[in-house]
Length: 353
Image (cartoon, rainbow, N blue to C red; front, side, top):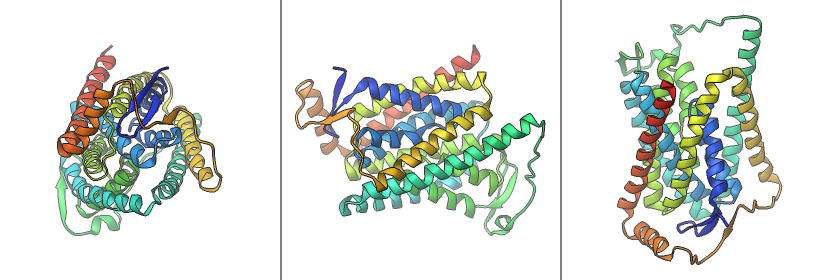
């Protein structure tokens, strides 16, 4: 009951579980403000979906949520297109390189182990940093302390060559750091399917010194393109995008983001960050545990070779994937764009009330 067959992955999933989980991750994304995509892929892996499929389909879901966030920032004039352009140059090469490495890992047969190690390191590190920041914010608020950030302080980064003016960010800086961090974000996006916003945002704030108001929108703009590249390359090279799964994930995420936004408007951001950081650390430790202990598979899905519910639809999707690779990839990206526009429209409607 409540099961649907995923023809590309060849498993049955409980679509109620998938919708609820993607909605929950959307809520987290709405609260944090940079999307919950970095949790989508780990959750899919915990459900028992093979990492190669979880990463590819998670990338497509992040694309949808990032489109929504980018449009919202565009309407508010809170993104720097010129900065985003240079970051994207590096991101394109990063995604290409990361997809190539990912394909090698699949052939060698160590993609599961490498994925677990990287998720353990990234999630625990990000969670600890977020926890530290939230504790400092709570302490400062209770003690009525105001911290002033010195943005004009120059470092060796600003002495690098190839400088250009970024009018929106009010910067005159080298293009080397944006391209470099874009490359790193692209590699991470292709290898783990978690977007690069969590990496780009601190780099833009603390290294490149972009104004905080501009950072989120610019980072999400970059993620839109990196996830589009990642979706396209994963679909073409590895044939692991499942249209049914990505639609379920995007429906749940869009609903969740709207709920998370409402929650953020009613509660203090410091406490929310504190709770979210604990959750992220727990996810990271879960991956760490899987590296040293054999765990039972979660029974939210079951493998099956043949599905008798909708054979015509399943055959159509599998044939579409293998016989029209490019069109299939573009279709997956197009669906993400459509859901992203819907999410942005709903977000603006809710905020007007």
